[in-house]
Length: 108
Length: 119
Image 1 (cartoon, rainbow over the protein chains, first blue to last red):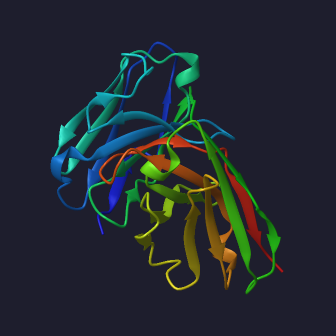
Image 2 (image 1 turned 30 degrees about the vertical axis):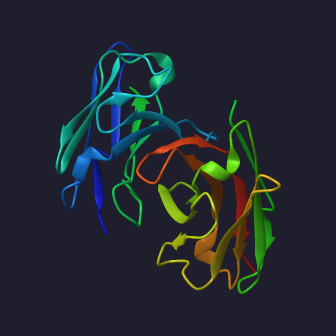
């Protein structure tokens, strides 16, 4: 089982600031089958990034993903009010599919 | 537009059973693999089970293996999760989620249905 560890657990930032979220895998995620979701309170997750770096349709270009192997990063260049949420990474290369514990981006 | 609508959640005692349903629309249902993903209150996401488009292959997390069964009715565009021998730790919001193929992320999610296991 591939264990995903997200850090930090909580990120306190102000609108307009940049955010850098980390997702580290216990073993290499081949073909970069790593995705990021955004989840707001009371809502289902929303696909943001797939294949480690490809934005899903409709996702603003202030969101970008990078990384390979065991280290992946989600970067939000300038936080908008609607970006304050929980972000989850997930690997889809092998069963069981696994998620990280999530990073909460909160307003400072 | 893809729509996934879960139902069947509720309060059940430990050891009890519950059957969740997910009604799908807006896509060619039988062509896509589907999963159930759950989220305990205040916790992260946990994949529970998956089924291929034809319904011939199923997969389960170790935490539910032997207790949960996944199935689908492609004639009615419905996905199901039969949950038996429920435990307190099964308490969660259960989402159905769609993938494009075996090696793709979940591109569509339902709104979830809450299952509470408590005496």
